[in-house]
Image (cartoon, rainbow, N blue to C red; front, side):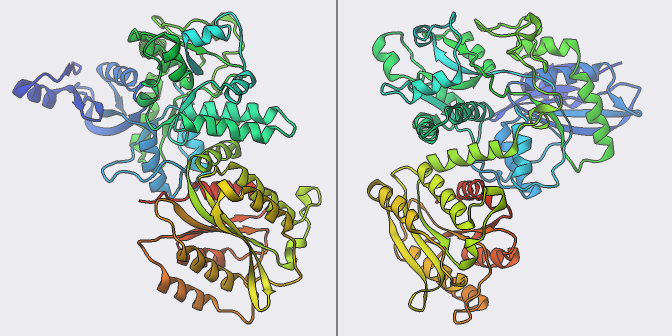
Length: 587
């Protein structure tokens, strides 16, 4: 005898059925499938919790149900599976907290969230971001893709037709040109720090901007970021609501004209018979697809790990591919099962279309995606879409004259200034930024010199650019402690509500000011003057191998921030972007 599976009805009969067999429970946050095998061939119970991206959860739940009905067990022990539809960003927050990682834009896990045994997010980029975000020991098992959905540019059909769809093939460079034109296409995106399809689209657009080359590449990149940011939405449903509800020219001109979404999103949207259907544009080169990796999270006991391995086999059958098709999803190789409603122009590996390359075995992250590309895109986005007030402080002590072998002979000073200049290009006019330099005895016995006071970029961007041009190394030592304390007091004096007030300090050495305050005095004074109502976040970027990580961690922590080390000075720019992106938004 095998267990049956019933949907919850109402009243006492449903409760009795739930106690005896499987049940589908509907909650405010989605649905959760519970099943328990009651067959005679197994005893005991292995409880396996599986968190799945919402669009895939019904297919996984159905496959697990069928698996159990056929006698799911590991070495004679029954398996009890709980399948929960879970937003990947919510699970990512839980896993990040558990493994000590920090993910830009993700935020804190809710107090009721629990880490599952198996996690099937919509993209391997979540697993990659956890690794690069500080979860060094995060090594999930398996990781193979069990489904896929290409990332497309969703566009109202009348607008797509003007661009030559479906006959004309478009690429990301052409889209970038439309985004940055004098009459730009109204673009949108789901917050890419919290949405994998949005992140994939952002990566493709940034790659297109970089490939243009020449003096306009940086301008194209920043322009695209700001265009996307102007139409960004926190939730996918909110973004979809911005598409036109009428095909008249006035509505089309004022509504959303293009957005990076999954193929599944477009199919589901059109299935609701909207007034203006969406075209799915499969731009070249193809963006990273959603690849739905099967991640067995580290730390689960061996019995659960065994159950997870057997469940995975149930999710790799031909019948599972057909279940995916009913959810508008493809198999992991990019092909689709029976009943799949392919959008017009959808490429298929089965049809010999090489542009429909399947996700690499083991998921996108295992397929060789450069971690720094994802981090750079996420960080650039965070900076371009957040407002802040920041004092940038650059070490100009004598050691900054040292050349960097990996930077074609440029000095540490030159590499640092270039990193600051690139960051400045990303900040929009809502930011307020100032610039100091420091060494020892730069102005009489004072260790720092103000180059540009903190002020709105709307009126002093060019002043800051000229100020960076004047930064040059001195012959002095490193007056770190006196400078940091003076900077903290300066930012505190004119603290601005509604913005992240911060200090970013670049240094390649230890404190060497014999006439200045001690580390103990610095920490004591910071503790005395800190005001929880007016927080200031201090970020210290250590350059090279001569900095003391423990020293920087101690003083940054006391000031309310953190230290980042760029052992290779050519990586300063990436570390700077990541550090800024991880700032906490004001409460």
